[in-house]
Length: 173
Image 1 (cartoon, rainbow, N blue to C red):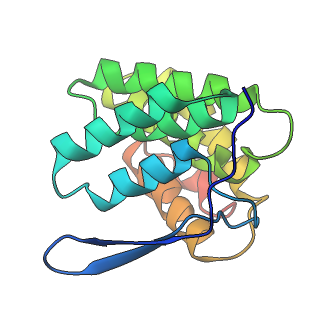
Image 2 (cartoon, rainbow, N blue to C red):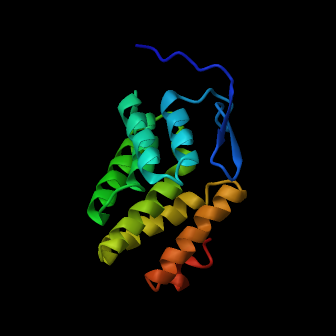
């Protein structure tokens, strides 16, 4: 079944302290998928973790391809109760993202590898965390110099410091 593009629409979500405006267009100009829209709504609900998780679960259920599944799994990983469950969802997100062949997942590969590395580190699996962190740094180099790249780069530097590897990652980021 073909996905019908959503109309361009502005969604305002008020958490009581601020109003966040979300556009149903992604940065590359294509309409957001239902999965992306649900994840954006979940992000706006992260002050209420149970509601955010439900939205991400809805996004997972609405996934229609590997890209959608990667996006939903990426956010679901952040809302797991155990480090092992988070690792599982991070692996799932990366597996789906690497199956995307049209380039849509390229922009968030650095973040996916960073989260995978952090999940391994949280479990004390340094030998698995290091290569994932190296992949995060490699993918970071392909991102444009903007706020997102800076944000992911800071995460890579923090994890490198936690793993006592700043000498290997400081200059690359």
